[in-house]
Length: 508
Image (cartoon, rainbow, N blue to C red; front, side, top):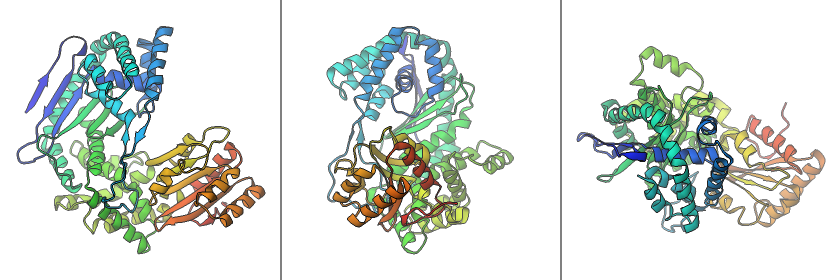
């Protein structure tokens, strides 16, 4: 049953709850389309808070509608300043009884900035936002954030009523209807079984829809924050064409819900493939979460809303399931065999899954997965303080699907905390030559390795060195005296055609 409710006044909103069919037990799916969620999302995006969003379009909108005075710009900067104070991540104390995860594992921290974003998505009024945010921020900061919402809300609501409400409410209604469609509801139940997720009675998954004007040529964004999917859309889009993004994001959440002991069994299957001589297995695992979401959401679900000819034409295009060519290729390779697996009710941690998945990717890629760039698709990054920041350069060059990367003076115990706590992840350490001794003191490299790297730096102006840190992971060290040289070496490492140990072989 669909329940529609609309408040009156500034915060006119739309929330639609979709109860699971009796034959397909599962969570309640609730679609939200509210001005307050959109306002706080846009404030984060336009002010420069680090989130995934259509920044160019939303900036153009704000320049036109909401940033007309110096005071407006100052208030926006105030939002960014306060929000920037709450970027901390809290890692719970280690559970000594937890099953160890041999590969990448999963993120098991609490990211305060994300919790603050969710406060805006959940709030039903400005007052409600103020109550929620004061649980996460200091009293003065919470009051200031509430005041900034009050400052921008009247003009934002005027724009919302003129443009976004009319453009988005029918879209939200149709998305909720599609969630009840057997072509969607059946797939969600099927995917939940595959990921080993059992939902508690009354459990809710929320979908927050975010309207985006089409002022600049720019793609839309989607993200999963816990049990909440964020989906941007533009006016005139058919909801059927966005279901792939909605279900793609849901698949990430389902994967995150795979019980830890079952995740350990899944990872062990990939470790076993590597031990059996399939060097592509660690890189194949790195692609797993994103490629499966693309296979299931962008591949299987969207097919129900396309003609066979249009679907085949779509699949034939490079990057049609995912922009990254490795993820796109992995998704399409999996699409060729996954449907019978799902129909049989077989889960992701079935002992035969890892061999089947790795074999499919070997056929699709050959040796392309046996490269440093493929291994570093999931990484721990330790970046020294150079004459300019290199953290973004690392992300831009390697485009990792998952990264624990920090930038600080190298290399004390704090800088190496993620490196030590995640021994199954491939690691990239970008370091000034004078700090190689600190790496040796911390036991990351030996004194002999330190001397060899320093000798190469003196001879060539920099060095790239690799060694195994586990049976499935390498540590890559890039040592250079300046940022430009370090970035050039990072590009050489990313272009390396094969795995190596010792110094990076000369490339032709």
